[in-house]
Image (cartoon, rainbow, N blue to C red; front, side, top):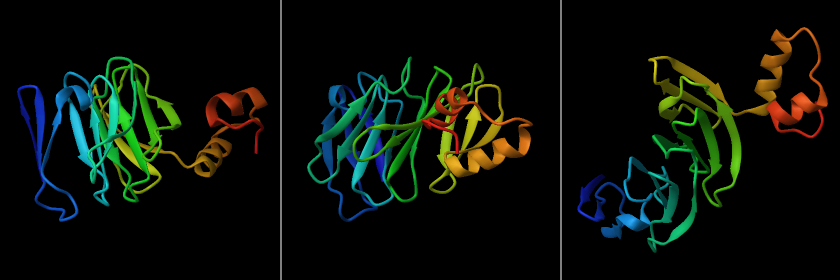
Length: 174
């Protein structure tokens, strides 16, 4: 499978997945004026394109399912989870964000601070590795139960309800 930039169009020639057809999408409809990254979902049903925004296309109709301004400064890199249900993105705002691939809702955001992610890849449906600006390779989990276990093993006090809302995105602490 391949993607090539040609003037104001992004030409998509797909050879690996029989369910996908060859097509052309205007660049204005594909991640904004410049596409920095693109990926097909493992099941072949979706194409995600990142640039000034993140857009997800249905590969049967080539229609935009959803789009979002994913990061301040645009999307550097993206990847689909192995089960095709989630998309992870990185950008210059210092966050690694997890999106629902079907509707574009933001599921989680993890701050990497000033050493922001330049590349990201899923290792399974709950974990990603991130390559950062300064050369660090970090493993991250999006599993709330795992985050709670890690936090409890390293914290000498319980979290406040405000900390649970801020860091775990839960209304009350477990």
